[in-house]
Image 1 (tube, rainbow, N blue to C red):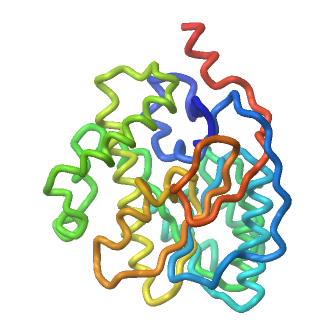
Image 2: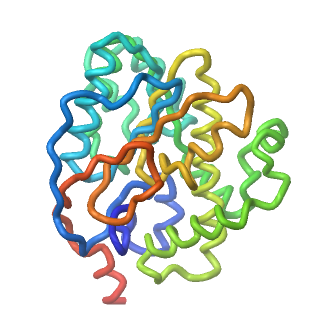
Length: 286
């Protein structure tokens, strides 16, 4: 979510529902390149919840994030790792892969989905296997995302989840407005108006599910691997985490390409712009 216009995750609006689960950490074209050397060590103590963002295709960001996480783990930290890249309905399959696989490639072959460049996530998965860190699926499936678009934000939650996250009440106006802006920018301002509310609901449902899954790991500390949009303090997972007791210590780190990011994260790591085609070109041709 780094530039003026975010990279579309699919080839057309008609493909949007099939790709709702992978668009919160993609980048926007048209920014000036800005580089930053990797810091020598992670910033701050280990929190109960560490939210680590990404621009999905930015290789520099993946390397930097892995290095900082590796240092924490090698120093003795043993968190659960919740990953946006795995759909929550595949947790049993992921559990079996962790028990039976000796390397990350094996896990990827068993549990992989089509939306991700899995070799970018190989180091994190291998780190989890090497240090016996549980891997937990954090994402809505395509089917669940479609249900939310069709039936509303409550569609995938049980009564307790609806109560805990106040989904029986109107969503805060600032949250819905900010998410709507991101969705519209992410689709180059060309998303049909009739689809916007449903896609906003799906994005919010994903954030709430990630928050819920993170809390389910207590008392173990948790790292979330997800797109920068999901780890934002103002409108992402962090906003939902502490609606439920007990209050957890949460740290959000954004791995960002050039743009406006003030106040979105506790720590921001500046990346060079990943070269990519103009994501809006396909829409201008239609």
